[in-house]
Image (cartoon, rainbow, N blue to C red; front, side, top):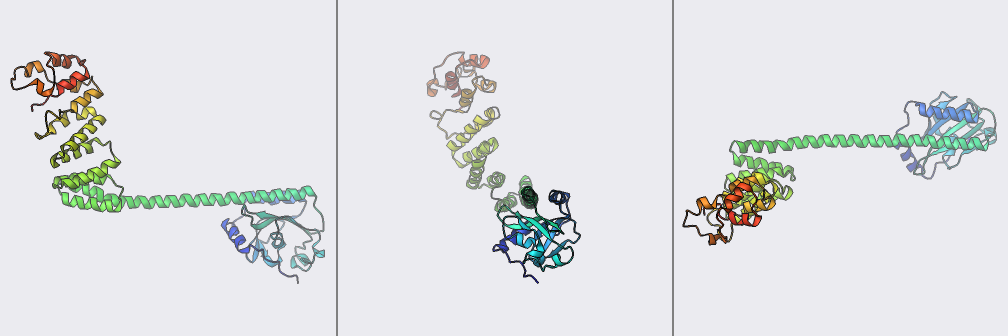
Length: 381
């Protein structure tokens, strides 16, 4: 009896590459049956196989002219083909010492002629063959050998396509599973946030803060909780903590007008009047119309009236001199301040122009410079 075929030097890597395709023991597929049909037609042989060499067997993914699904690797002609990257041709197996005593030669199916082209992975592993077999000795033309090579490359391309689809499908499934897990986690974490909002709405600020703390511990990037915790801290008189929370929230949402207003209120309560004025001013730049009547009256008596004219409406008019809300806010100097002997217009560094404010209020055409002058006396200091 002939000796078993030798193992390739890269046998471990080769087997690993083969198993990555997850094709062993799968049902027949037309795309592969078409290749074996073409191979048999081109080479004029009764048998054609797509053979994959596993650890101890050769398994047929597709077959023409045979009924058995596999044979022992020790008997496989293809086990010799995978030792090289070029086709193997056996013109007469009875005259070849490697196969002359092989049971597949001496008995059914009585192999005499064999030609196999290796199936080579992109990584260079020979995992099997596309082969043709005949029961009589014969030759193949160069064109037939080349056609066998081309067909083996196409078989390998289908294997690659299969593997890539499996990898992509597995990746998509893993992402879907990860996304579902993340959604479940987020839903669990969100419970703390909404529970905190509800407790704050009911006035239970200490419990609300505890829930917001738990939420932020589980989701440090849940910045909305900083804002709501800041509101709760303000209600409990923790102004320093409230400002810290608003600072954190506004670093990530600097254009949130309501948060600017709320921090401005806390800053004014804390005694940081410049900070409060800066917040209101910035908020008005974002949302001028909503800020017009809300921002002015919050400044306490401690503000230096001469050095810090109320610039809220000034900035609005600089942005939009035609702002009708700001125009209507400006009072008539003639009607109110002429009759008040306690008012000194020089205190506000203005040159009194009788009727000027009335003209501005009606027409909205006074210059920004003049509008700034009038704004200094809007409030009854």
